[in-house]
Image (cartoon, rainbow, N blue to C red; front, side, top):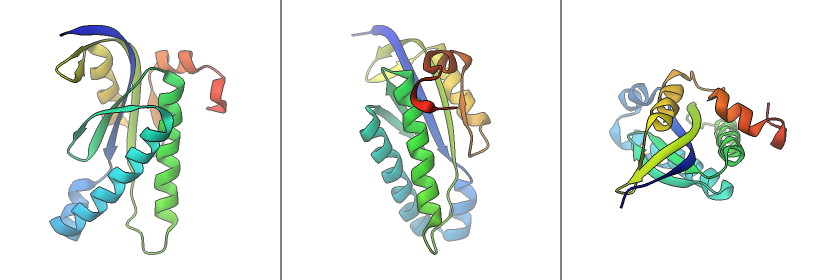
Length: 147
């Protein structure tokens, strides 16, 4: 059954994953990917998001609240920074893009312009800053002490 409604969509992408695989080899890169996915999933679980799917080395996550989505993105950044501070840790970078709007839900997936824009924002992120749409910025406003 097709449904529609307002949602906030967050996409992540692991920076330099192809180079990582080339450098480490497939087996070791898979260990790093799994550790990275665990960081993402822990942040999603603590902020009320729902993982929709993985896309190679990234995630698509949906939230009811724009503030929760931004909170998740911050939690992901903090988890990656903590991981990177560990001795001998493989240094990770993450791209994050967030958008909100009316979406269509069908076959356990989300569709529509808000989804496409969130993915494009993620693709344009360099790793580090979270890129949010103007709409998400307006919805969050000054709440949550996020700048």
